[in-house]
Length: 265
Image (tube, rainbow, N blue to C red):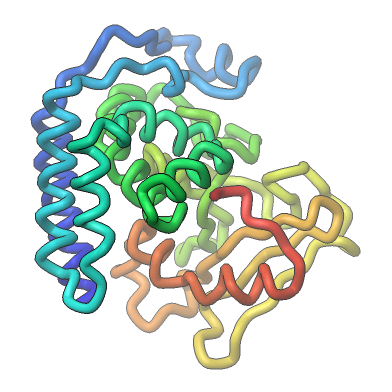
């Protein structure tokens, strides 16, 4: 059932991406893009992007339809979102930007107003923005040397990584942005959040049941990153990071239980 839900969301997201028309936002596509990017945190500032409201509303309605289709036990989410939007209590563009900015306080207040969980609003804002982020990220393919970026944040939009994996071919550590879905390589023994390289304060833990899932933690900044060892996966060629980020929620619970912090809402 969960896989069917994600397939429906993926399908709607791909269709929405095809239908999206780019707005006038500055994109660095020069030959020196990589050199210029290394002097700044990112190439695109999604906080200032203007999203087509008609397109956004249409995509929102498709997501609501999917939620209604798969909500058998809990019908509150889709209903409250529809009512909130209908009563002008839910501004979709603002939600997308607040989620991208990781504004937990905004989500907490809005969730209370709509009688929902802030995690539900985070999911909605993330999904609504993804097709837009991916459109712009596609424009920068080949412009950035992702193997030599050297920073913990996404080279395209500046966001922190939501997931990492150890590549099956060579064990290289690859980080993944949940917003624009950009991937880039990063040092194995370095915290992507605070740049800590002290091996005595960097470690990881995993569960015996699924040893290819692990959590990399930093005892200096107390943040963690869920990581997948692709070399140990039963079927490594079927690694889908978007789905893995959802299906590994049990790792978030384990990390938080041990006192580590999630950089996201």
